[in-house]
Image (tube, rainbow, N blue to C red):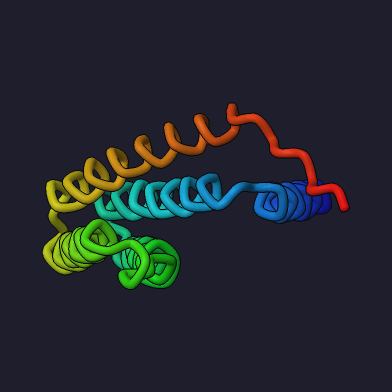
Length: 140
């Protein structure tokens, strides 16, 4: 028991450290990873017939989409792209909600595919940002 507790504490500290050191692009990738992991968990529970954990996992994924990915968008600055992403996030959340209600793996898989494509694009952007030269601090 002590070992499991220590492992959880270590993981939590590692996550917190990763968040503190992450670029904005990496933070978005982390949100995608969290949503995808929650969908995978929900899918596994759906297949196993575990209704309550399935609902919790898919609810977590929807929360990450709504309260993390969607909330980070600023349509006043992002323009049409931000509005299109909002609409896509709404669509994905709807697929997850229906997949949960109907026990439909295909809807969960569709949401996974769409989020995976977006995640890969953000990961590519983050990698390019990581490779960019770090500007030196302004000298006074």
